[in-house]
Length: 470
Image 1: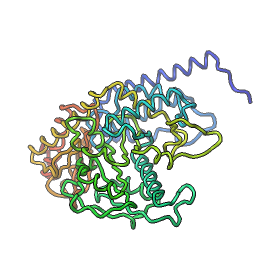
Image 2: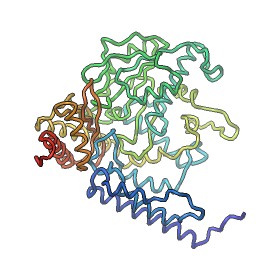
Image 3: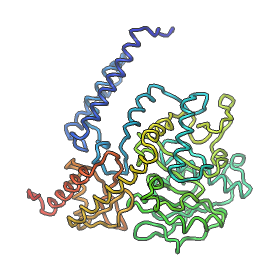
Image 4: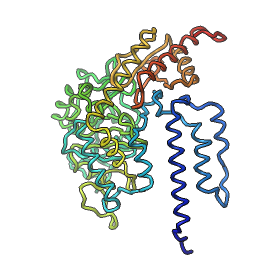
């Protein structure tokens, strides 16, 4: 069947569709502060208005965009309005949000530089800038991927293969069956995504030894297990509950002298290295062998965007490169040979847009500012009598309202209130509210209004059902 010609009428309709979508997106962004953080029950019921049966003819692109806006926009969680404090979800930097519209129209595949010269160029610049901002060696290699979970997996595979190669075992040729055993020493507070990555890398729980942590969730250097040249050590920058980081300077030099591979999961915390006022949290992180971080958390890129980093570029390429006649490339940075994906969107172009827009000082201010907002939240809640469980670090605040039952009830009340949103967690056997200040648009007023809402909900819960106490 011959393809339809690109007539002026079809091109005009396509342009009009994009303009309509852009206008709706701009209106959505402009109204973010007018909406509650979580959708109303009415908005959630509106999701039933989406067609659930696939028809033969289709409804047309214009109606699709209209439905997404009319039924979908009201049912979104407003994670970009300054008052969403759940799951370390960042907002979206304006440059990134606007650039993503153009990047979507470009539809570039950065698997190989020849597929997208502009994508490859911006990817290379963004990777180099990221290393510089994070304070990591300029000889390391950074590769953009779907998120820190994939970044951790990528680095763990590189670590596994490198350590086995040192033992005389080539995974590429011989696989894993019969390979010399490896040991993993991981902080007992290591994130669940890293445990998932270990499983995907073929490393079972029987191979993992836990390293004890202190009251803030930091690994205790004085109780650290023995390691050798067959050990992968997993540390973290930014505990997901407390924000505290492991003592890298105390640990890493000795671990590497004994031949261990040190990997740091720094999904959000690694970005402390971009700020002079917060860099103390990541002192010594630059000494590790590999690192994983997100750009869609603290840097406020849109989802999904992580960064896998290896000190020795050969270790990453050995683990990720492949051979295919139609995919040959001798380029230093070919995305398909630096990660698990072949086809991939131009994530580096969006990171370039953020970093070019903010500059070095802008990124440092972003990190510092959100840490100050977290300190403000902790201070306001503490003044109101709420228990702050751990001294605030970076952008994380961990609090408790009286007891487990009350804490659960307050979390539910806050979420129902819709002024802000925060989630629950368990910290050292007790229920707690976890507050992550990760959206660049969060203002002092947002923190004040949110803290007031949390205290109001607490007072209402404490007063008991059927009361109107504020």
